[in-house]
Length: 215
Image 1 (tube, helix red, strand yellow):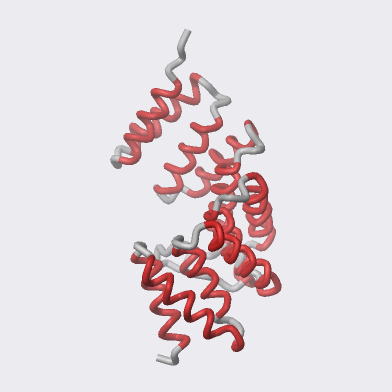
Image 2 (cartoon, one colour):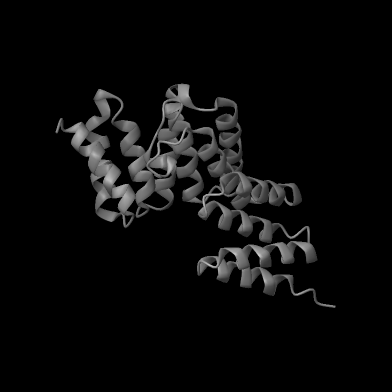
């Protein structure tokens, strides 16, 4: 007998995408009542909650997806990204953590380290995913002693998808931190600015370029 869980989960995603969050979350809950071990529905509900700014609730969904399927790379990636968000202080601007890098001293370091473990697991499970490598690089960039690992992760993401703006931004940001690599860092940021369609990234790239040029 069909349980129609897939149909309900699809409806839940459609409703949340359309901004009908209350009904969308209700449909996710109904889906998971029908099929509690539906890892993909837990993941998608977590994604919807994250878009709503309910990061702590999103972490519950991602964690449940991983409990059901520990080798689920998308759940490992999204859990790691959500944990980085929670590990960093809010700057009050609403910016994504990638564009509001905080000093390590202000972070919840144990939670950040847990996030890095999940992001590394996402890379290990799906080494051809450039977003996983970029996200890992950005998390590593928060730790001053892991800059080399961050740079390697960005370079690996660029090798996988040269037209993906985000790792060029991450690599540029990392390279600006050492005088001997400022020129390459500037070049990477200029490339990110040319190919990015994300207004928030473009604003941050412009800020970094102005800072690097002394303006």
